[in-house]
Amino acid sequence: MTQQQLAEKTNASRQTIIAIEAGKYSPSLDLAFRIAHAFGKPIGEVFEYKKTEE
Image (cartoon, rainbow, N blue to C red):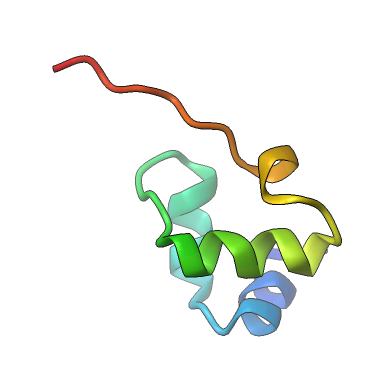
């Protein structure tokens, strides 16, 4: 699936998809679920939580 196709399926911009892939943007929970649904996968298979150091 292309970035543009994923953007269209999730009602997000292509720039948002690019930023998520590059690790420069964390999607909202709603968008994360829409992305997982677009791939037909549970959210835990598409995203993993990485605790940030404070």
